[in-house]
Image 1: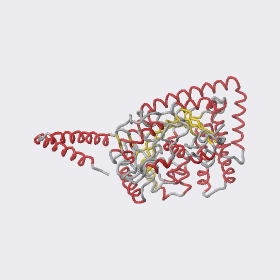
Image 2: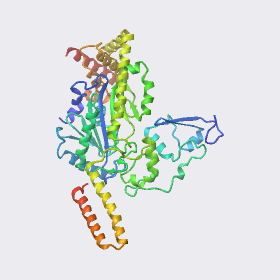
Image 3: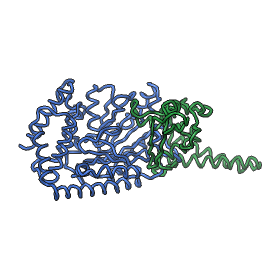
Image 4: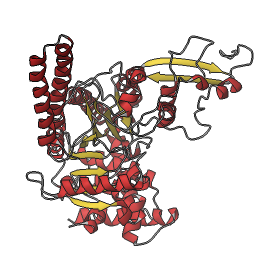
Length: 181
Length: 357
């Protein structure tokens, strides 16, 4: 069997990945496998982390024979401004550095979560009481801000003042009751 | 209480009150929740100072008062324990290997009966674990949920509407929940049915592992079945799906046991009593053999072929004959050969006690 990457040398490495029941096969020669940075199971310790970071690195569905995005072409450095972790580093370690990383890397996360969680990208479970309550208030503030903008644009200053007061009250709520950590 | 007891007894108090629901097949049920705090970097990137602050703050908050009917939690800091003491806690499933070996300012809060463990500065800031004997998914869910609420009253979780509880590893995000059930499935292994069943279980989004978790070998026909998926399903649904599969496995294991008893009782009896003989007489025993023989004897007890021995002996000796425990008892480090001798002696002694008691 020829290597499916270069179509020249004999394929020496045969991978089968089964992810949530979906089977994907790859047949590569040693050179191409090394180039692609694929881990060779058994060659050294191959952990779940390696598998995971392997998943994170595949931007496109496999099987489209010849053009894999190489690691070098990973997009303009996405970096989490809060903890300084780059997307590249995240893809390598398979670990987020802080809660803000989820926001910083958001545009790229859906495909990863889909693969890891059987197609799911949205939380459908428990909402913590306090954090959940604060979220509601935050959402409310967000909505009021838009309203405020709208009133200002239309020069409805009396209305705008009312909305501004509401926002101030809600902000105070957050600070009073739940300002911790 | 304290450290001395946590590391000197193989059987945690929560395991002692008998086998629990479906206890002939299900040894224990566990739920763990991964949680992080807002505003602190996750442990893997945290600086020494930040990890220390987070530990100090959280442990103080969680020991201020106690969860209803639980008593106060005991704090054990990893940097105050010897490597072997940590190993013993790992063998008892009270802490993870990661916390023992790799954490920076790692610690664990343990309840008196050891059914609740809260690891701090593991891969996530907080790893809450509830252990129950037998098959008790609902009870585990209720307790872990209650404790989670109790913790959330004190510290602010990193939570996002869209992604749920934010965790260091993408495989835990959402509910942050891993529910797992430890099963003894000797008949399914003997009749080679398990190899057929396992791929089907994987397809349902569940994972099967050995007794010491990820990457560990299935020793003594003990298997841990747990959910893989944490995002996109509610905690209740995850537990429900797991329950369905475990119920089926229990049923299949019972069928297989009946079938073996019907068609080859004498062969099974022979196997069970040979193992019994080895456990009560051997002078050298490797941990793998010990696990296999203990599994046979446990099956014999469950099928009433052997009387007068508690089924707990499997759980207890599986833990007691791990390297950390053997060294704890010896009071010193042991070479693998020395451990095999100690292990055999300990098992003999324990079996003798059991028969006299």
